[in-house]
Image 1: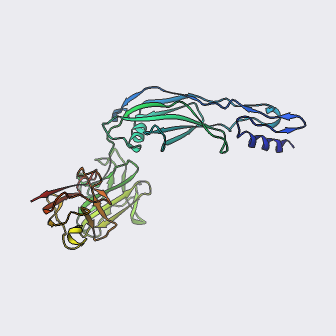
Image 2 (image 1 turned 90 degrees about the vertical axis):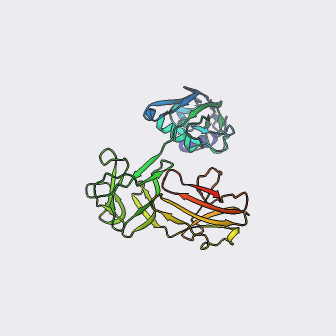
Image 3 (image 1 turned 120 degrees about the vertical axis):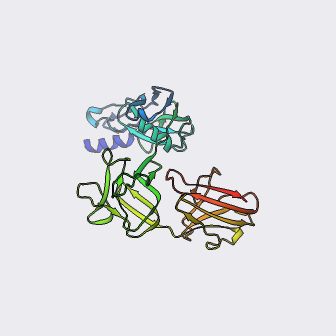
Length: 350
């Protein structure tokens, strides 16, 4: 009988005041209130030197639930869930959430920097992050929210590289991939000769970082143990290289062409093909853009799913968008994929 009453108590505790009766007993849950949230600072300007330091903390007081007849029907432990919500929107239409069992949440410089960038903040620019505490006791009861606290956070640029030193001396670290989100997923463009041997290194040396070779069980499987082999190119050419330190794998896609296409050439992928200059490491082509409708796109390997454009009109290439062209004329278009941090282009009217 006690087990049944405990089940009933838990179900009814989803309401602010809940009760069930049996032989005159009444079970009541109380004390469910919105928390009060505070931050240790209101403005944080981050630097890479603070990466391991605690730079920001949020603290709150939480509801203290009490249940009558707890000696008979159990307690309210575990019913209350506190979730810290962080967002760059005061409406919290989207947010990063941390469910906490304690009464505070602290951030190191590195963690806060990653958070600010993931929420849309830009390096060197102050971003306002709004915080509130969401308290809930069940899916059938509306949560309560604390006051909103705002903190200005200025993140720094955080770029992670994966270098590709050649195996002849391991001294040339010019070829490298980039993880723009710092999430362990890297990519970059590299020109290589057949049978070029190399390894991946997280630092521009072979001693202080993690070094990856290939596994004896497969060329495209990464191995950081002493049993690693060299990695090599089984063909020469220009390649899009991707590597994941999460799955410990890498891949290459041979680039056979980049084409400029648009309404001006009936969306042809063969009419205006770019050429590669191995000295400048740039692709270029001159073409007559006689129709500026829909702008132009850069298509790789004559594959429509492999395309570049310019979302913000800032000269940085992103996937999937068009490059606007304001007037007709003959243009020289140059594309630079040598810097894995960002791919760029120029379009110059002749």
